[in-house]
Image (tube, rainbow, N blue to C red; front, side):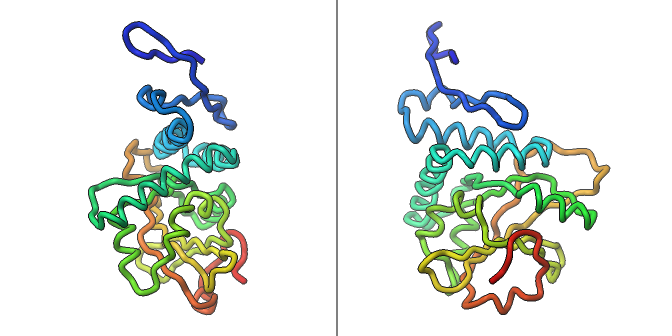
Length: 230
């Protein structure tokens, strides 16, 4: 499709069609000066940005169907890798973030059965939470973080943690050739079903904690919403 390009000119760009509602997404104009991975990652982050304020179920379907596209998932992963590498090198939080995926529709169904309705389907990683997560003794390997969107898209299991004052979700990952269980805590924001939806980026669900557990023993008390814990 054609996109305005300044000085009355246009350019031909590749748009991504949302498989759920048919809407077209194009990258910001500046990304066209550097086509390729940056171009595709712009499409991915643009969709994720819009998904934070979209209907939760529509956003879940749109994001997860979109990330089935290998080229787009790879591009988003590379953009997130750059964000993570820069954060870990500089060791300073600057209020930056990246959206890395969305809650699956099946998990939304299980939560709905409990009368719990997330304000957003989107999962976000902030630089301050990344630095806090990597400061612990059971921090996750850098190679895991660098492929975070791909991992979030296909977790081994999603658990419901009711042991905290505010319920949260645990994403569990079994990684080939990596010992133990990699676990991410997602601070899911819930709303009452009849509460009006507020359009704000703050509704996205942040990853607040990460650790490697030696085995699944400490996870037995949590309820499984998706997948299985081996």
